[in-house]
Length: 258
Image 1 (spheres, rainbow, N blue to C red):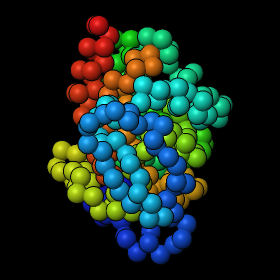
Image 2: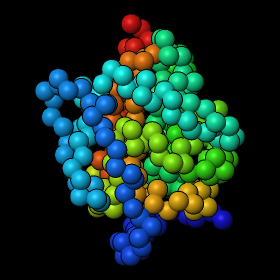
Image 3: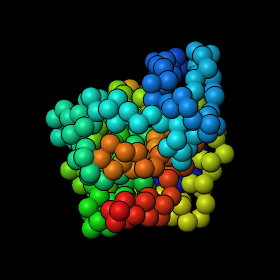
Image 4: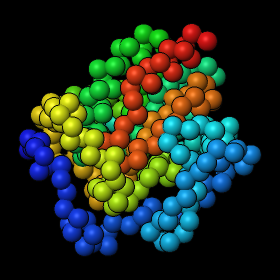
């Protein structure tokens, strides 16, 4: 079933999501192992749904992440779009390989179809400089295949993290306010963005939405690695608040030339 995107399609009803207890925040975990205790860069403090104060690094800042970040992520098991398990340290060359890791919200998010479309168009530019594109979404592998087939998107670059393991470790934002009411989410309604969204979702289907409905409250992010070194980190402040692609391409180009 295809759904044509209009402004009403992407304007959600608060009551639909606040009236059910299924929409819970992810398990509380400690981010201290991922944070650099000596950094003087500012951090974000926010309350999760359990009223516990959580420290999370600000968007676009790598200084707040520990050098051991890739080691922590390395053993996290996700899935290929075909359903095969794979760990993070298998996704790219951990010595000198350059990788762009885009964490989509979930496979049924129209804004993520737009981002996936943009990444697909840039894939050749990434690969021309030896950069590997890795797109990860929330949902079962069968949901990833729906996006891959209908967008379309290359299966060999698409992965599924149904339990949001990587998202939790990276401290990516979660919640009703972030998802639906953050001011940055309004960017998707600009004329240029809305046209790109409409084009990317011409074959969209809500069937790609994860079975775990709590996942629709998760935000994504963008990370660039060279080997085990984190070169760039971006946390989406709200739905559709994607990292500037030109910045990503510049960082990758400079890393490849270094």
